[in-house]
Image (cartoon, rainbow, N blue to C red; front, top):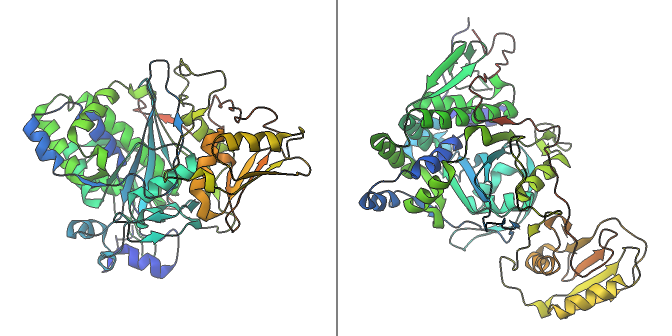
Length: 517
């Protein structure tokens, strides 16, 4: 059996960059599960004085640093709406503790990247929840963002790794990126770093994990490794060992395996918190709350322990068997074999399910108040004010129905968009599209909101000042875009699990005997 190699100075990240290999990159998965744990335990409360103390621990920022605003789901019959929280893990090395845990002292000054990101969707009636991951290597379009202080503007980027969005101003840019991808309005974010993972894992008191054979994520020069060593079976891990579990990559085979390991950890943690009585034990609760509030960065409205109390009160009622976890379907990127791209239309089907507030498991009915053709409630205003009369817009008919351009143009004029002009069209196209230059994003959002267009109808491209609305065959009548029926089930490519599965084991990919012993 080969010996574990000594990690070189400067951290595994520097060595992996020098090696130039994707599989050798310095990466880890933060335990966003612990952020979820905070939401679950915060509902148990403490004295008001302690609330004030805990509030002082938070780091808070703006929720959205982009101009992209997602759609809200229409309220159900009881007036309830879903809750969407973006959970973020950052590799920021801005503290000695983070450098000690993550290595790479030479990276201490750079902005953190979002090496893990999950969307927690909780149904309007709080009967079920879903946790959806996107792997860090996935190529996406990142919208234009600005820094927290508003002094730095970051232009929009095409085909960049999704983890880079965090470095462009902070969590608010990642929120904007997710809203652009999913077309879903995100209500809050929670972010945790290296040191936060370790302290929260210890405060939880240990979480059971299982491997199907002996695991040794041994360190290898040019490849890396966490040195986590576990015999076959189930083991309680905490502190740095929990962090190592969440950082393992190659021993699971790839990034998809790593997100699965994180989901497994999260699910086990939720079961443990409930089984141990941590949610009602004042001592354990205070330890968890202290560690969590010191570990988390959140959006400003969430930086209040009483707000977390309210969230926790609602979320404690979600049964573990109704918490679904999955990673979005991905494929090897066509432009870069070392990267991933979202599989379509499968991924969009998942976002549509969430936007319609459909449960992702088969254990409950669709929302009781869901209309026959469910659609999101349109956002009435863009993220920045728009002078409607200054919007230059041409309307073209490609619906196959005579007079549609004039009809929609007149409707836009009545809505205040007096710069709308109907022009002669040629041919037909199946779908309606609103094209706009990047500098007119806010105007496009305003037009889309006024007409009820879905976010998927917006297409950025070109230059100049004018927007172009092409009426497709999917809009043959009326002046408001017809709502589309939501899907009713997950795509076949989505591999979902539920948090009540206490028999699950991670499959070790030994690669000969490299990752086993």
